[in-house]
Each structure stands twice: as structure tokens, then as C-alpha cells.
Image 1 (cartoon, rainbow, N blue to C red):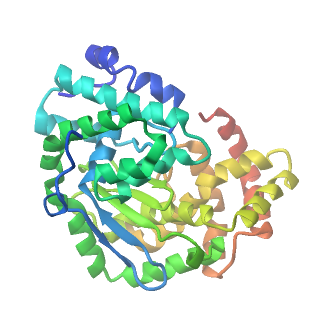
Image 2: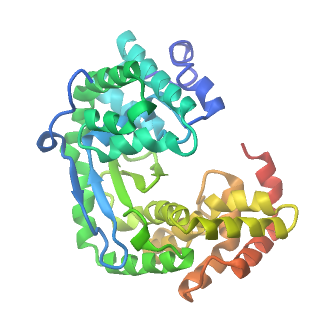
Length: 372
């Protein structure tokens, strides 16, 4: 088995990969196999005409995320999440206990990821991951990343991805899990309703889709029983898919990550103006704004969309987000967000005033100051 975080071999060999780096949280010999073998595919308009969204099913993207997960690298542009154990179990299934060489390769990958992130500034932390997600080959991705990746680092990434390709091909199974999800989503009777819902979310944020990139779902498989991880990397929205998942199962994370995309695609002057308002809303304004960056997408995705599309399985009693301050704030503003979306409202000063009043009434500030 892959060692658990408390085991001796894990602590001694992989401590640099996980234990040290979780605390500091920043952000191959040959091409990956060709598209017809690895199941690379892109398709526009998963939902409909109101909210254009692409889907990408890419072996290269999935392999890269799998290695992030095995090594536990976190930070801007890195994609490990709460499902790291699920991905390690998949490693065990196809390869057994990791060998010394396996661990050495994983360490090289993690060290390279962290080294590249440590030199990246001003949003460039996501450039390599975006290139890997969007380009058809690793060569094209590394060329696009340019000077961000040094020559020896490029060689290491090629070597590691090539080393683990045969293992991951068995897990990937020609993209069977994400492909089946897309087929089910296209037949789902709620597809048009979700498209219309996203139109209301666009209006709420005030994003001009004509001036923004088209959001893209990066679908990767994850075994059942361990939850899922989702993450926005610019317009690339990583979504883990479990076997048998249908559209309703993935509505909350899809809407959540698209909410992040729409927020950061707003006109920058308007976004700055909204943030400036926080200074006028009391001493807790800046902290409330910081928590709201996650609480608002949570209230929209796990809250309003979850209630509308998950119906029987949705509940206010469920944990919507891992951090307690975000979870409490999201639930506190849920009625406000639902009313605003249903009435075609926008993210503006009156909304912020009501949201920050809910922040104070729910006592989120005390929780937030205790959160990492």
C-alpha cells in the first residue's frame, strides 16, 4: 500500500513532498501518447446557448493532476485537494507499494513544481498548469510556459510524466469516466435549466462574456467514496468525476468554479471598486471580503444551485465547504443570494451591505481569525 501520512516510510521519504510543503503552501522522455489512445477531446457548449462552456477530456491534464495529488503539492496553480488519498489508492491498485524509484520520481516532480511556483509572480503561477491543461502535448505546453520553466526542469517533467504514463493509463481507461459523464449530461433534462441559471449568475457578476475567455471544464476521474475536488485555474475549471456521476451530482462544483471564473472576469475597475467598498463597511470589511471570495461561490453553487438541481439530497445541514468560516458565511448569505439571483439582481453596494451585515450577525469574524 502507499504509506499513510503517519507511517515511517511516508514521513522519512515523502516529508518534503507533503508535510513541509503543506505548511508553506505556495502555487517526458517522449511525448504523451497520441489523442486517439489517451482520449483527448474538446467540445463546446456543454450546457446551451446562454452560457457557453467547453469540456476538455485530456490524458495529459489528468496525469498532471494525478501527480499533483500523489505528491500533495498545493498553492497557486497546483491542484492537489482533499482527494489525495483516493489517488494514492489508485496507485496501489495498479502498481502496489511504491518502490524507491517511484518515490524518487515523485519527489523530483514535487520539487520541480515548487521551484517553478517559487519564481512565479503576478498570476504567472498558473501558467504552467494552464498550458498543460490546454495544449495537446507536453512539448507544446513547455514551449508556451517559456522562461518560466528552466531547461533542467522541463527535462524532469518529461521524465516523470513518461515514467508514470503506463500506470496512469490503466486508471484513465481511455477517459471512460469523464466521457460517460459528458454523454449523460447532454441527455439530462435539467441541462437547459442549468444553462438558464448560469445566465442569471452572469448577470449577477456583471461579466461581459464577449470580452472574456470561454470557461473550460477539465474533467478527470476519481474513485468513488472519497468526495471530489474542484479548482479554478484561470478559465480552466478542474472537476473530478466519479464513476456514474450525472449532471446533478456535479452541478454544485461546476457552478462554484464558474462563479470564481465570472468574478475574476469582471471588469477590473468594477472589481476594485467593489473591494474598496469594504473599507467603508467597518473594521471587519477587509476580512469579510476575503472570506466572501469563497463564501459567495459556495452560496451560489452548493447553496442555490444545489437546492435547485440536487433537490432530494440537498440540505442546509450538510457541510458546503471545508472551512467553517466560509461554510457559515455561505449559509448566512444563502437567502440573500437566492433572492438576488431569482430577481435578476447584481453584485453591488446594496448587496454587499446586506452580505456584510449577515457576516456580523453570524459571527463569522471570530471563526475566520482562527482559520488557517
